[in-house]
Amino acid sequence: MKNIIVITGPTGVGKTKLSIELARKIDAEIINADSMQIYRQLNIGTAKIKEEEKEGIIHHLIDIKDINEDYSIYDYQKDCRNEIAEITKRGKKVIIVGGSGLYIRAALYDYNLEEEPCKKEYNDKSNAELYNMVKEIDKDTTIHINNRRRLIRFLNRIESGNISSKKASPIYDFTIIGLTTKRDCLYELINRRVDLMFDNGLLNEVRSIYEQGIRSKAVNTAIGYKELYEYFDKKITLEEAISEIKKNSRHYAKRQYTFFNHQFDITWFNVDYNNFENTICDVYEYLER
Image (cartoon, rainbow, N blue to C red):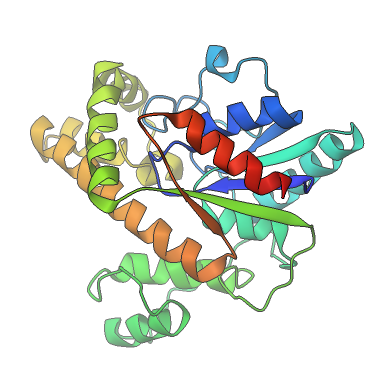
């Protein structure tokens, strides 16, 4: 079994549960690879693992930044590699778990990233030109041609180290496990999870941040927070905000699938939600082989 195992997949599929069970079996520590769980105060909306849910397993790179602070792919690359070195020095295996594909590639492949990310404005480019540039990198992109802000953001991330390039070589020996399920099942899981987040106090969590006057990059990016900010700004109703959170979560899951399939040599496992132990056994047996 390899010393580094990556568990990834779309939002809401069951990555956290598998990581805990697997970590107990193989004596591993877990490194977070969810870009929003880096931040303190973003808890319910990011489905951040609770202390009692960790079951004594050591977790790294969770709650390491305040939501007013910036945190880049360059920062994650450096921090994750440091954690891998420390964990392996202790004789433990490493499980990297999360759905932020760019973070995972940055950590595991030989990208020479810039400390300060490139921020080109592309004022000389039309939307059509930007869209064609994005399509050359990701032919299945879901970014709309009229969404200029997202097109530019995507291109800037690529410029800051070309994270999506398949030309990079891995610097570790690792295995990537992907959890998946049928699309309609996943969307139902996502919708139910959003409802549960509201039952668990998401509205109050976001209201508390909003009332502090925080308008940071983290809040403006995180699904569940940016939509509720629009509600608190009286731009949309609460019902519309909830609908937008579910829709954006589903769209994010679709983008994750596209990225994982194009950028990783990944082995997919269909999750057995009726008996999750079957999924754990299937993954463990595969890793043993």
